[in-house]
Length: 345
Image (cartoon, rainbow, N blue to C red; front, side, top):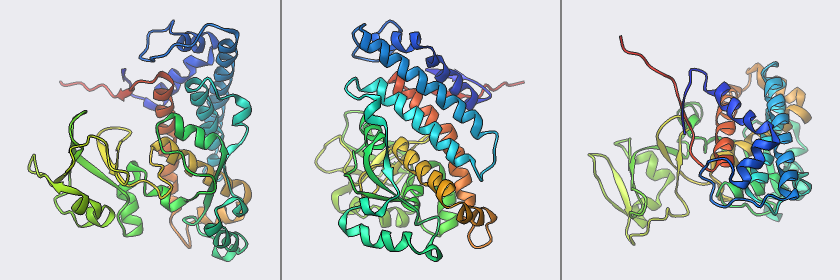
């Protein structure tokens, strides 16, 4: 569905609030509403209950979103995460009839070093207990049971292992909307590179890059020159799978930009790469800084020692627009695009 609008964020939310009515959720799930969803749910009491739960999550998310816009960056990341979590629950409940709200009581992420894998546990404990070492980039989340792994699964992402650790900088470099500012700020390439073109569905996996120089790209994706073959076309540098398979290799995934175009993205070491997974984890980490490290967060907002807060403000803007948009697509199970109308004299 394409929607013409001069206020895309407000319009996205108006489409989400359509599901504040349990009847609309029920009609979507049972197939009474025309959509691209493939498997209708039976019209049972369980489906009616599920519709009530989804509608409640959407309504709470809407209020959290409105509240987050009433405060500044000192507080808004906390409200933004509660909004993201409510939206994530709604998407999961619409996608998997076997998951209940009881199983979604926990975030699926933790800030306790003791829950990390054995190799990461010691360094995280040392970091967490030494405030002088705290930096925004090294703030982290540890995967456990709850919303996060369920969200990764329903959006088609890799489900990370329990105990996997995600650091904030590792997540920042996976956000296509932040690719350029990441490179400027940190003086290193992000793990997202804009594509000029990509193979059509069913054809052997192939990508062509917008950039003529491949130095930064090969530094992030050395496998391009060893596992794939050079395949320049459209007068752009490109690579194609030698074995003719259409599936992307595990070390390189294609992700859409929230506005236009595609990026080649190197997944996180725990293999997540989808924007919903990355933005949910990023929002969780920021919300915990706001909640549990307020003095550290206020110093970060001052920007005297580090200007990373400038990137995090842009991250919050990306979460505000993209997370709601991608949840809308997940609920409907189809593409949504929003464009501003233009007029020629």
